[in-house]
Image (cartoon, rainbow, N blue to C red; front, side, top):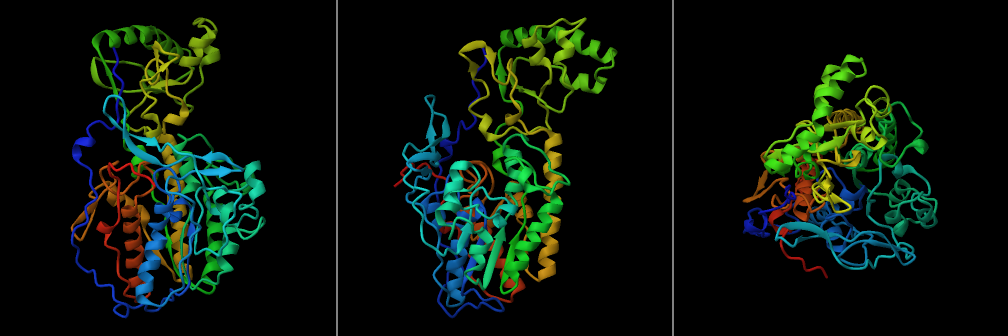
Length: 512
């Protein structure tokens, strides 16, 4: 029989700890450092969840306190007298949101173990206490809004409390927007910032990626009102909006822009392999018998009839073998739909079987399986041992990011980053290459003052339990990259953060 695939087995044995070694370069006396040509007296940060301090699948209090803008503000205060850095703090440390008393956003992930002793991220068992309709008074220096895309920063009503119920507004911004009709950018500009950071654009591709490509690449469509939640923003539309945002911010302030990482560098797409299925000899033989006629008769017949090419037929073949390493089955919407053809002559398949085979194939090394599939692959449908998800029942589109979908994401990301680089140069601003930075975390990792971090899920230290957002230590790495850029661009000497002082994923599940 098939054994369920446990994605995080063995992690407990690694002895997860959050080390805090004695570090060099810890002098932080006022007057020792300099702001150079920059003015940090009123620093404002704009962005999305990465700017807000979102981690472990939620926005919670300690995450906000360890956001990279908060880290930066503390370091800026050592180089210059600054105003207090204000953030729209949530009400608790376990995350989640309420709207009129009803939960609308889940609590954070914590590291737990299942019945077999395998460590797994699970939602913290608590009821959120942060009420969206109970607005908090600003102004706030951290204008990071979880879920925001580039064009949301200039969208009137994006912070409307009434609009949250209608699905037209963002609940996080609704908590602290200055009015029902304001924009994120307007509230930021109203503070007359002297320095700013901008990290926006990740969500313009991320929703498409994490949903397994369940959206459209809106090439040449500049009408944001027609976009779906998981669509990729048109690069030209992105470039126009981004320039308008920066033009307004840079009119009276210096700043640093941060570009967009490629989604393939985040653990969300690195944890679950494309071939996680272990099978015994009997199960593999039964599955091969089940798909035998499909491989040897139906596919050749479709090629002979000119319905599909030989290359597509080869990509559709389904085969299993004894042991580990069997590739999951999946639905690929880029394949030729065959249901209606298979129900006709000469195949005469029933509707259910024809629908199953319509766009069926096994995964290949070019596919990416999202972290959300870890607890789904290997489960059964209605407890039927013959209906196993990822084997006899193919994974749906939301559980697979195909190579074609990855190409669309990469195309948009390259074009977004070209636009960001061009805007930084046009306005004489600093720019941090977060794309290269996260790529480095995914390969060799980064070492600072005797502390090493990388993007390995759970144990690497950089990424939180949602596989997308950073840990406080990961955010400290981002803060240091921004500080390095500030020091070079603005002839400043701002001290960098000691990353060992910031926590990462541990076995402690204590949430206050």
